[in-house]
Length: 129
Image 1 (tube, rainbow, N blue to C red):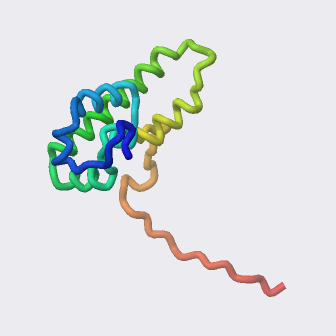
Image 2 (image 1 turned 180 degrees about the vertical axis):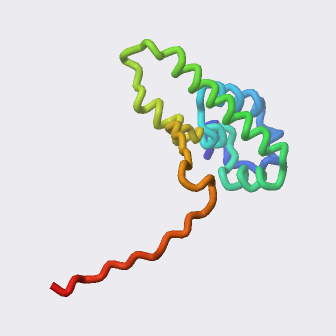
């Protein structure tokens, strides 16, 4: 049963759920995950992701929910930059795991100009001693 007391619905049945668009957008704008939103409005994750693959409009809805949630997390981090009690480690993990953020790494190839370098095969030989 979903959080609102109804069984998971197909996306076609979703139209009968009162205010589902507003519920989902409000939750996403407060940082809720896709699975939290789907549970609240009563759609199974399997059904939703299957429909995302079949229908670009549904995928765009999902992408917008993710954007709203990321915006909330970004704003929360920005607002709390000076807050010594803010849980930066937990915040960083959320950003990395949910939104693909990572440490900036600069990789520079200064040896081959991007071309493959053929190196001779080196094998270790046990000494005779």
